[in-house]
Length: 340
Image (cartoon, rainbow, N blue to C red; front, top):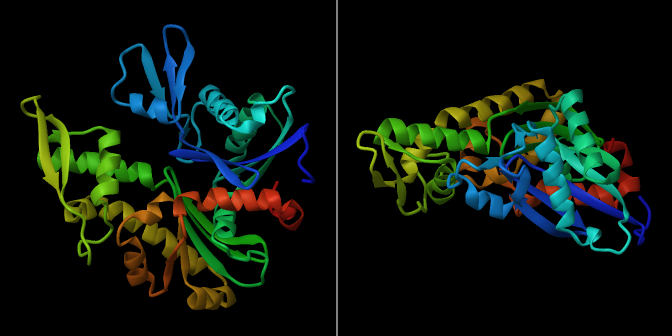
């Protein structure tokens, strides 16, 4: 995209369902939850990101806590505009005497529709971007993993984010076959909420479910170094009183089993669609995991057991997609045909 100048700035953005990351000058300058808090009385934005997340589940009737993205796509167009605009404001780009012309590369799910893609593009335009390009999540995740996506060699990437799990086989700078399913971090949280309600008669919120997932989340029921039981606070369904219980990782592995099985099935289906020469490459190189879901304890071992292939977890999987988007922006001439 050429040299950066005072009047021409470039941003890479991973606009995620759960978190959004902005890269500027090869550095992560913004890493915030994709959440907006709206004051319904004044119709003004009260907070965005971490502050808005702190309101979630604790807001009064005048404050709406909104997640503009659901299942990897924009669910609330107006709030998405506010989110993107505020994320840009958090960077150094907007702190100049004359607002620069913004060029952006935004990461999108591979299964996005034309209508959903147009909503992302228009949201960025309304937020002030003059030129917007898109790159698919699996491709960005592969680049962020250090994979040479331009080589005539098959690589499988599994990116499990907040809203979608993206599975793709990449070769010669293109996605040969892929599958995008809306089973990821958000569904894991819902699984935990449902399990706590049915098994322990306790009602918990999304924030608590997220904390349970982080603290004792597991994809398998036998871990070599299991985490300590986690004290979970909620409301007793029978008495309506506050209640606390201890939850262990085996329970959460049971709660998440069906959702993880769906991801396994999607991986197997994608492997079944892979041309034989590329399948041979994947047998040698294995499967690469990225996204927040890659941090789930034992997930790599479970997928390895199911596919009989080596499974590699990305360094800093939460930012793999954002790093790949940033690399694609920095080396635009090299990756220009991957960016639309």
